[in-house]
Image (cartoon, rainbow, N blue to C red; front, side):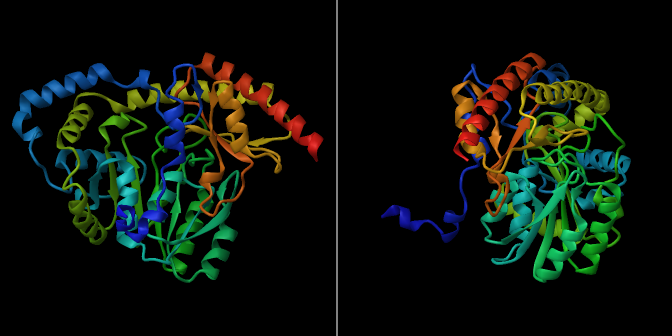
Length: 401
């Protein structure tokens, strides 16, 4: 049969559960806390119209032509300038433009993972990274987290137990799915351990610019003196996700290999999108735009946290993010958030069950909430419904114990 023609790796890859949930939440009556979607009303539509027209008037045919794999040079310069502001010194030879940070993650898997290699990650971690790495058939080793991020004592133990570790995958700022932030001393310690055990670090930082509370922290790559940190970021959360622009910042020897692999995938990232973004950065102050995003997300996060206190049962734990898009909920161990999701969906409220964020399939009593995409009024209404469902399900569960 034709299905037998698939490669062996096809059984390793499955559709993203978050993406499947988003199909359901497209119904207008659904209050969705599911996807990590930026607030669409904050997209700089008028400014982008201006940037588009300027690019077409000034660069016309060149903006619509094939481009270099590495990316549009003015945009790479602008990225280097922005990274310098957060403590990463680089030049354009260290930067590759990708089709969103998701492509950067997938290329990283293609570049570094041999079958059976160990990948150490936070527990839980980003679902789409799990799915991307999964196709290369590694062994996932999870490291416990607390409110200050990955626990370094646990990380060292896992490194000792897994000498074939290829890299540590981490999201230090407002982690997806937990919203937690890796504290300063742990960032320094992670570099020390990576050096001691000679492993790479893949630092995924899509949310770092969206800090609305607490003090800014330098990236892990800021402490990198040996070129062992591969830094990945994106314009999706601070500008627009639809343009699909991300980047990799890494040692030149790595970028050379990344470029070769990217050429086999898509030749280059959308050159028109790159030029539009570069022109926007030239004509407008993106930090003013980011500040608008932060103000809205802070208000919505505060609303959601207040609703958790008001409407949810008291015997749950939840994260207190200082930025980003997510709050993580830990329910009593006997509660299956997958079943809870079905009950909430019947009441037109959606979230993401937590189990898929654990690469080895543990902890079904968790869930992720997104606060960036719904208004304060929708958050209040949806969280009240969730609270009512939670109370009802917990009461049923207690009667069965």
